[in-house]
Image (tube, rainbow, N blue to C red):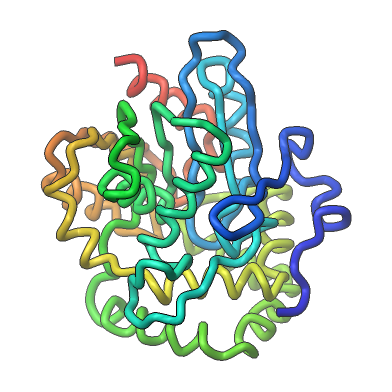
Length: 306
């Protein structure tokens, strides 16, 4: 796939570049960002971004959390500056060895944590990142990993409703199978208005830096291909069916104006989880942590200090 993001050129002004490094784990090369604990007793929090995003998503929130936590952020497989997810020769939407499936991503993140020798006490997952956090907590391969709680920000736990949900996954599979689609999308994304419209549809407002960083990401065919691979291989009905088995507490944070994931989905998920809370973030959209990081940081700290 042409035009993979290059760290020396595309990443020369990446947010918190001084916190970045590259790690080989789970069959791929990861881009990770690490903020050491400011005190010896600060718990580790893992930050998992959503589909189509990268570590830049935490650029404003991380500095507000780091006085209270040790932080680890990463680019998911196929996203940002991380390598593509390992592929499987076996069939099935959630084939165990397919790194782009939900099970595969959960295993890959667990392998990264094992390589780094880190065990997070908290996981903050945004959108699809929240689904990965739940799958990790459910996964037999990570049964020894027992975080205090999961914080699910605008969590993507269910298929899209109605005809969109019925068509989206098959359409994503067709798009992901066509190598020309990521190139076409990346070419279209060079038009600033295209990316602005995409961001506007989330219900969130953005500053110039956020607009620039997302435009940089989606102008990369490799990044677009990674996002398409992710959405085309996920099995959200299976995740929803497994939610009643989850014993890790989940704290849902919901942007009132989320235009990507219906806010009601978090209430649906809360009803299925054994131990869960829900808090609405007034006036915020899908990318709440980018538009109002202070408000989100305060909500996170209220949860973790209980």
